[in-house]
Image (cartoon, rainbow, N blue to C red):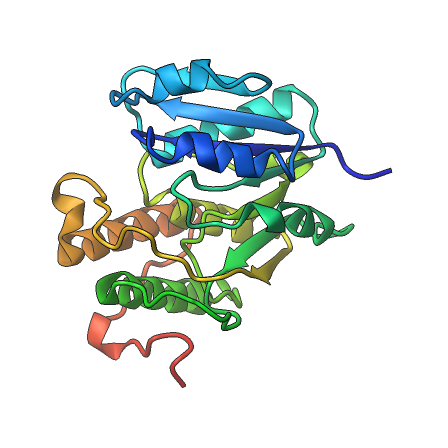
Length: 250
């Protein structure tokens, strides 16, 4: 019997994308949850016009990590077998949803999309600072936690819902995936990566506030990682940025 799965999309001010993206997603997923994270641009009105979806609303905006926390809770409460998370900015391909679920074989807890595992025709060239920071943080995670991942920030994932109990998401913003990786390693969860295309439609998309500055963003990510590592009794031992070799370049 195939797993009963929920596809969840965190949404914040995506009025121009939400309709087309959901139309595409519903071709490959039956149960869809949208977490409207305090949108102020008409997204809520657009969602109200779309039948057959679940909507959870945050007021006010709480952040990407908080939206995923709500999706985790919903999937657990409603008794799903698997949860797929996909962004609503058009940068993930919904046609791959069934393949991510199928890759969630017995004994696997997380199937994590990777934009750097393989090269696809038509791949985008990501903004240089985003690629650099992703590689630096990914190598640090691998070094500190014994992981073997290539993309620490891809939001396109499939989770075994029975494994979600291991996560205590307290980071509300974009650094939440780093907390997730530490907690997954601490719980001994089995993670595999799944190659997905590298698509950037809006290279200037904002992180919000000071995090648009790459140096501040990297420092924030390092702070989150250190706090989480220390929380589980691991030394932070954060190396200097210049000492790191970007993952995938050697």
